[in-house]
Length: 360
Image 1 (spheres, one colour):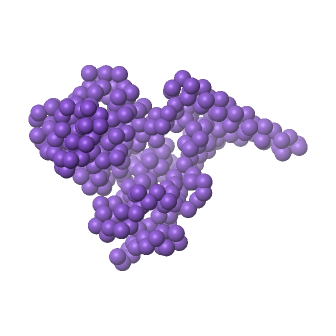
Image 2 (cartoon, rainbow, N blue to C red; image 1 turned 180 degrees about the vertical axis):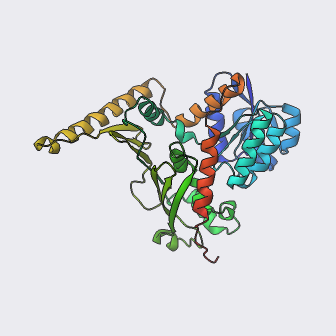
Image 3 (tube, rainbow, N blue to C red; image 1 turned 60 degrees about the vertical axis):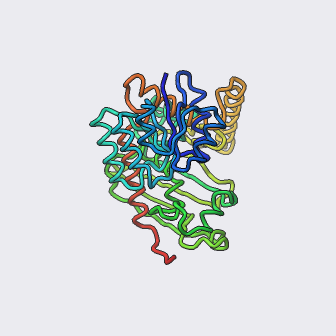
């Protein structure tokens, strides 16, 4: 049985508890929040016995096998280090840490102490992303990727999050180097880190504030981002984040020398895109029929998975957490390579070095 503790009892903690309860052999035994009322409320909602407001006390009393940290990112490094030094494996919600220097220190500590750490990049483990990865490994692209595109979005209409952020200049999100962008884009960047080599030789970011956010009184907060990058091997990649594009994109495109793949995380589909063209009037008919067949196949697959209870909201989180807990019990490799976690942090650093210096 994997004994799990959760540090940080806000909204995201509920998702962790639900996901953990779907995993055989895992159990939440304690929750902790510096605000005792938050810990008490989470514990009462899910009938969890242990409730604490001090992490050190919880680690001594419970000695959990794994700790899930769901606090604001400014506290991630110190809390994770404390847990690792106590011998507990750690799952850190995104963004992993605030800076790449913190990420590097934490990963080095984990390797020295033989403790496993995982980043909360659960969108890397949705059913469609797992299928994409199998197709790439099976050689569908016809060689190494040539170009990768990642798209991510957020709806400013969600006032439960944006309202307090805009109203409070001391809100923890506004204290991040990349503010709103910093708290959201890790998922989209992690997709690119999977394919990019460690040496990024070129990275240019365009960051600005939308007219809608200006009308909402956005202050210095930016909500539109476009990034172009190239690694030492010549692979190019682009990333786009927007609060304005509708419908909001959440997808990945992987272009190979022979064929390409499109992953749509909103619809849970993987579309195979063959590179071979046609020199007749079939070029106006056959590609559309191919796309229709691909979309229909995805729809049937998703419908079947729903009926079998294999597809549901937060399926990626459950998959990632299960793999993390399996690594804890088996001593196997972490679910996300440390190379990708560190590269994601380094790319974020370079993006936010170009963040506009707008007066508050």
